[in-house]
Image 1 (cartoon, helix red, strand yellow):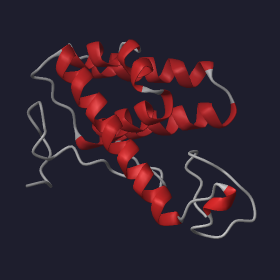
Image 2 (cartoon, rainbow, N blue to C red):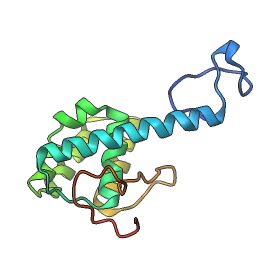
Image 3 (cartoon, rainbow, N blue to C red):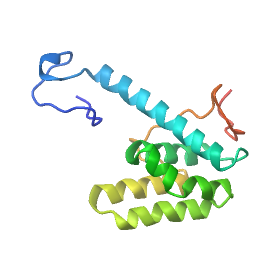
Length: 147
């Protein structure tokens, strides 16, 4: 079983909806939908901050991970879109670092992993890369690996 936070149950088999359980495929599908939605929020708020903003793939991925975990409104209000819009990537990293410092336990660790991805391009083995290179891009794309 995969645990993405949408629902949890014990002792269930795939496709057993009588206990509110879902299959691994359904969980993966919901996760993909959630990540695509959050990637859209990141694109939108970066666009609002500055239509010419450029981010690397790993910066984008870290921002999507953050937004997925904290919520679009929290990302919007975090100051990160504005910092990036001004070209102040260190400032955006400082805001993320401050959140890690205020948090504790697994939440602090999650923020530190997002920070490391944002600043160094280092991925936790469980952190997926999110497609920023698609037909819906709303800002110039420095990604070299996408068509």
